[in-house]
Amino acid sequence: MNATTKSARSFLLAGVCAAALGAPVLGQSNVDPVRKFAWGENIGFVNFRDANAASQGVVVRYRRLAGFGWGENIGWINFGDGTPGAAPYYANTSGADHGVNVLPSGDCFGYAWGENIGWINFNTAPTLSAFNQQARVDRPNGRLRGYAWGENVGWINLDNTNVFVEFDSLCPGDYNRDGVIDLLDLLAFNADWSAGLGQVVPAGTLGDIDGSGTVDLLDLLDFISSWSALLGTEC
Image (cartoon, rainbow, N blue to C red; front, side):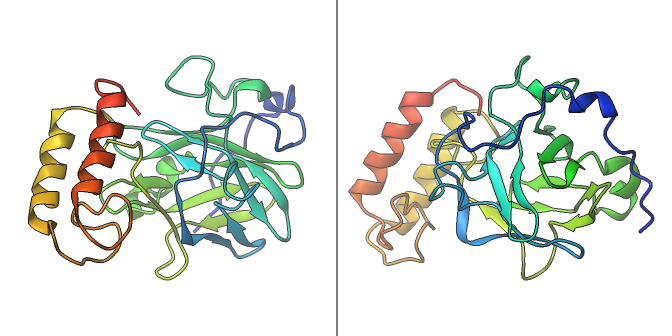
């Protein structure tokens, strides 16, 4: 692939501080404990989960990413602080309001920042959408796909068959992953929970909300608690 993606404008550098782990994020990372790596030919692996024991790792939400990734060869990467100046999207017009956004289609845009490598551009749709390799959030399959581009590091692969970033539900209660907590989530959960009730299942499937491997009343109570607390909100 030709590196034709435009690099981040230099004025974004104003206001960017080092990616200190004291910056606010959205909470515990929802990235999978095993499927947590992206790969860059020039930088090696990037861990999307384990910053500060996952309490400040990357969080994938319906409209944006937040938190920190770690590359052994490049240091910290800041995907955004979770609080865009003009919700739901980071403006990316100043260093104080930068981050990776996600469109309803799943395509990403905006910038992550690495103190040692500079800007990483996630708006690769103009270059790669014809090949279906643009950086994007694959909500139905709960994983990242495509490629991001760093002017100083080249392509970062989010789409490897064996090495990729997987995440849990975008929000507690958003069971059908459409970014809105509503009655459709309750209906979708009820269908899975009823089908799995009393069964031993792979952890996290068929209504096994608590990951115990058994579908039971505790899963229903956990889901209702999360769903009712966020009902009517957008992730």
